[in-house]
Image (cartoon, rainbow, N blue to C red; front, top):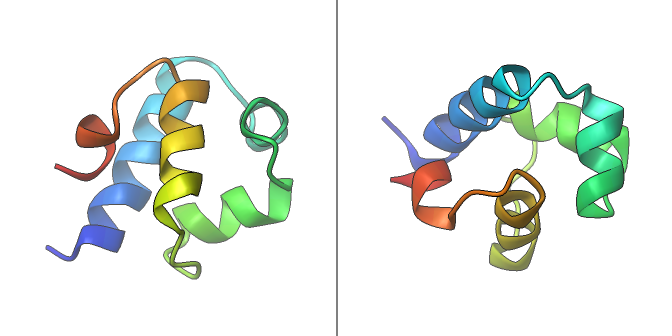
Length: 67
């Protein structure tokens, strides 16, 4: 499985488990809602700094998102 696919699936799973909307996660990570949707749809290849912000926003580690 590609790293982007893993990231997209795990991001969606963790976001939903925490009861967050796309907009809520975007606000926490200082991203746009559209960007988060594109990430989950595997239409956006994020920089490492974005993955780090997402992990912090979800109170998780980068490894959990991409491992």
